[in-house]
Image (cartoon, rainbow, N blue to C red; front, side, top):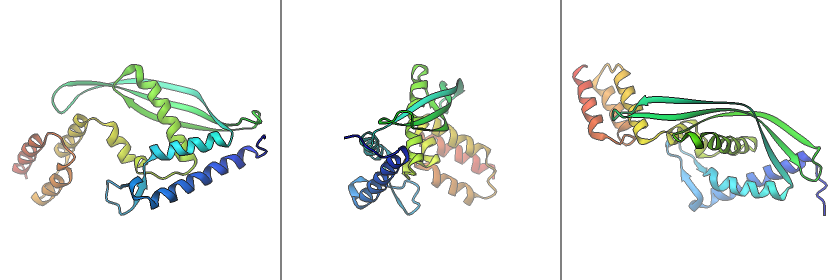
Length: 211
């Protein structure tokens, strides 16, 4: 039997499912991740939520079409914290995302959306950007809050351990610490996030001598 609901009624049904999933998962301790920043709240992993939301999209007779309006791919070369040359690829996408009612394909709703994605493999850069773009669009469209959508966490996950070390060491070098207490606080806050702890300690020791 054909679903008689219009496009926005179908989208609303998916939105209701997203709300239900979040409330149900928040009662299930096994599906919850503690927020890594210690902000005092719990959030649901986006991967499992997206799987369930995609099922609801299919059940409600919806298709999400992606049209690439503009694409820019740039290479970035730099030296990591270990002195090794590194190259990755930055893809900037501008897309038009269109919801389509499969029972009435002329009924559509389009929104412009964009993203920036990084990948060390040139052949995978564009594809990974498209995947990220669609995932992020769905999560934002249905207002699904997750720990993985924290911008700081996204950037943190995109960086390799070497990139993280380099970022912390660069910040250490560029920061003007007025007291040893300020330097000690910086050291404690970043110690668990850096891979080369010995190098970090030596850099902090050198910085301490300059205070």
